[in-house]
Length: 443
Image (tube, rainbow, N blue to C red; front, side):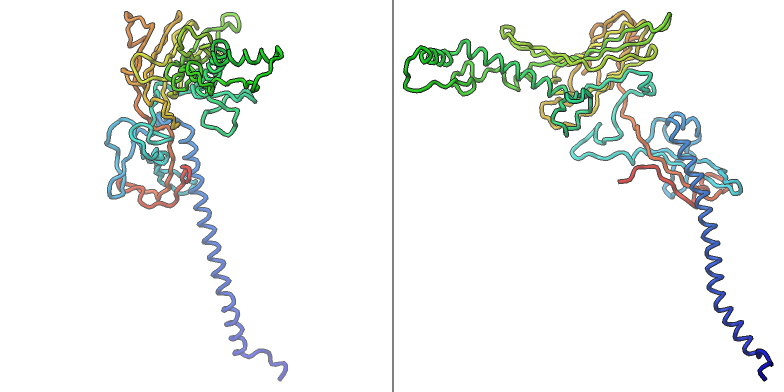
């Protein structure tokens, strides 16, 4: 009986046990195969979307519009159709790129370029400047390339410890001063020093102190030892607190002048490059009888370019020395002697400071000089800008023109949706989204 082997029942039980063990193992195997296939599909989608994003990011918006002449528009029901709206710049653009393939399967791609993702609304602001990253006015004549264009900023200051220029918004270093602050402190110091000198020379209070001091030096005994009087607390109203020492008077009577001098330099026989000297001068219009220094000049930059450049940009922020009247304007002087005409773009930037002395929309004058022509463009309204030194006999359209540019979006997010490939009309496409890739920054 020990050699009869397994019975049929025992064999069936063994098979059943084996099947029970294999079923979950097989389920895991098939699930793993499915997940691997899905992962491969997602990787394919991701590769296609990433390639599209990189292609779009490498081009300007103008190049993108040329590449995708047939734009799309989103319909209220969520479908898309061929674009039929206005031709001017938009906040959101939709483009379709159909028939994208991973080598075996075709897909349709929906590309969304959106400026609204970068429009962060500022509280208590209306009109231009409401948003920080988009919706600000600047020239849209050419693409700005800092290697081929002169770019200068009025809101830079100098770190006296490193001799480096930084943006004025950084207040972490006490040695950092923007030029408005430097000029303000300078005129306060020289005016105060002059007032002290006049007090010592002309005040009866100080003369009395000197007489008592001299008496002591001559051996006389006085009831009290004289204390050197201070101008501000001497009780002498003529010298104690003169108007020309007051900050409000300095702010009211100081003008800021920006000077840009353009010239050429021969770097080799017959080859010339452009040199630009950029400086800012503050002049305190004090009474002429006051004998202290009333002008200070900051040399910002003396730059040499590799070739003769065509375009100069001045990005300026309004300062405490800019005035809100048609007579006392802030001055911008540009002198061109570089042997060719240049385009000069004067671009007012939003000022984020809360200083109540800063006029939000000041008057400026642009003074052109030199032997060569300057074509002037600005985003300031015509009634706020005065041209000086312009030959009115010259056709202004070609030589000296004021152009007000509209606020423009400059920063866009890019979203690419990989969709099931669908034949037929545009309205039937981009409905089954398989994968989405966003390039916009996250909060």
